Image 1 (cartoon, rainbow, N blue to C red):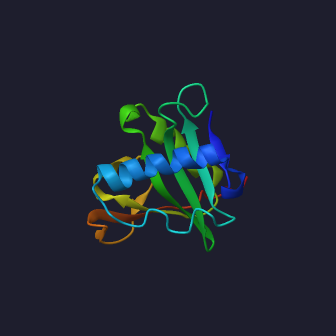
Image 2 (cartoon, one colour; image 1 turned 120 degrees about the vertical axis):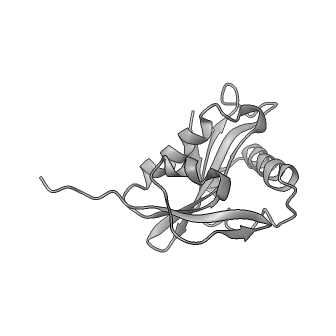
Length: 153
């Protein structure tokens, strides 16, 4: 079941499981010493979307897949897209990204995608919007998903 909460709605157990997955992947697995806790998680408009592992309870795996959605001007930014290593390739990340797109289809959605995932994000309609850059030593590409346009009857 897809979970969608603001920071103030998260239980301490949910917050711990989310942060544990993010640190395990973005800091430990990717060998990147950077400030994972950047202050954006607590912004009132930030949404935390995740799929719990197992039966919906935070269990031995905890969070199966996660992303956050930040308000930025007239649009949003998707970030911290992550799936538990044991569950990669199962389509969980696809479910979350599509849910975020569906919820924000009338606005521009930006993402700084790790370069090796640009093709995957392209399958959702994201387009490369600039030059490759390094973030914490990892190549990234700025990408955007443009708002759905209304068609007059």
